[in-house]
Image: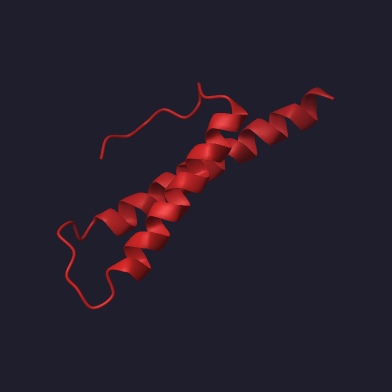
Length: 68
């Protein structure tokens, strides 16, 4: 997976992408119990993407609070 720059995305897109990534991680973790996955690093890469999105959401919300 390529890294995606989340700094330029609006808040709604970040929230939508976060939900999609969490759902993909859930399906990966629980959908393939007992079977071998092809990409063993996909789990960790999805968790890193979720962390990047959550970090950007936090910074956007903090900057909004500081502007008030």
